[in-house]
Structures are given as structure tokens and as C-alpha cells.
Length: 156
Image (cartoon, rainbow, N blue to C red; front, side, top):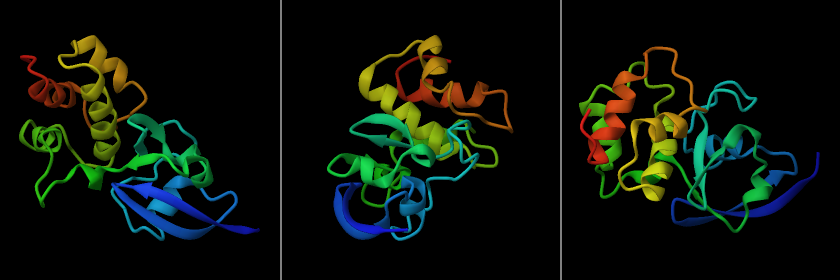
């Protein structure tokens, strides 16, 4: 397999690295960049655990080639932390018990973050639609929805 030098802009920083032509974004994030918050679940774009933001839009890192996102702004769950503190959305997931085992949480948070940036006060239906590509095997989604609502000015 041939390698190429790629530059990825992740969480506000540029990273130059040699990657296989067919390297998946999830593998580059978790491997050389050591950003393990992005979870590798189904490896086929089915579960949403690997959701990151690319230019502010949710993208499944397990079906995205790293080379495809050169020159674009990539954000991972780690990038939401500011000055060592969780983002408001991450804190809401913690406070409202939106996490169970935690495996799906990074993907859920990133999908919800994309929605928050587009819609100031989303309805429950909009939240459910935004999270539709993210599967949780632990809950009935009630606490997840309440976590998102808590930061969007919507009463649960």
C-alpha cells in the first residue's frame, strides 16, 4: 500500500503525517493523533459512535478517508473541551445522566453539537432527527434527549 503525506486540521491544530492512501479518518485520529475519544463501533457507518464534525457538519469517521478531509476543519470530542473543562453539552450529558456505558456518547455529543450550531432552540423532533444516526445500546434515549434539551433552552 502506498503512503502519502497529508495535513489534517484537527481541533484547531495542523498535523502533518504519512498515511496509507486508504487510511480511514477514525484510524488516523485514534492511531497517530491519539484522539481516542472518537469510538470505533461498527466499521460500516451504521452506529454513529465515530461521529466527528467536518466543517461543522457531522461525519462518520469510519467511512471517511483521511485524505478526503485535508484542508477542512475536523473536530473531535476532545476539541469541545476548553481550558480543561467540559463543554456545556458534555456537562449536560454528565449531569442529566445522558451517558450509560459511555461508548456512544462522543458520537451523540458531536451530532448534538452540530445541531446546536444550526438551530438555537431545536424541538424534540429535531433533536431526535439529528441523533437518528447514532445508536445507543444502553438506554431508551430519554436521558440523551433531556441532556440536549438542557443546553438548548428547552424544558424536558
